[in-house]
Image (cartoon, rainbow, N blue to C red; front, side):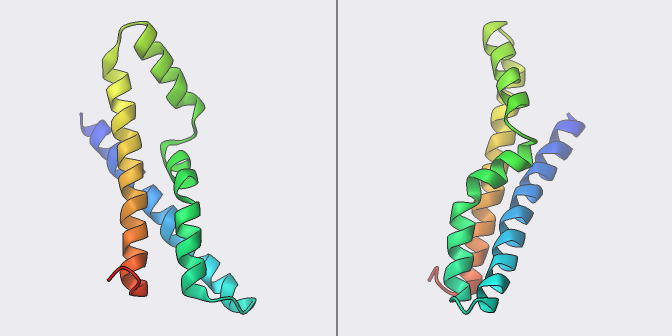
Amino acid sequence: MEAFIHKSVLIFFTALGIILGSSLLGSFAAILVKDPPIGTMLKLAQEIKIWAIVAAIGGTFSTFEIFESGLFQGELRPVIKQLIYIFCALAGTQVGYYLLLVLSKEGK
């Protein structure tokens, strides 16, 4: 159980870091090419959410294999774990996006 919690926390913060890092670095690139950095940062954060989820859970093929083995062999525990991992990654991306909204003062 401890390993499950550790992995869930790691997935959450990995997704959070991907959103924050990519958006902030993208906004620096926007400054270099004279685009509005805040708008670019929020647009990048919105567009990269799905990729952050996939990267945080470690790719999609292992997840589909676990779903397949769990559903067709009657083992629901691995399926539930994968769903929780996906939820943790999704929560990390949303927290990152909302942090960026608050920091940019667009989310009033």
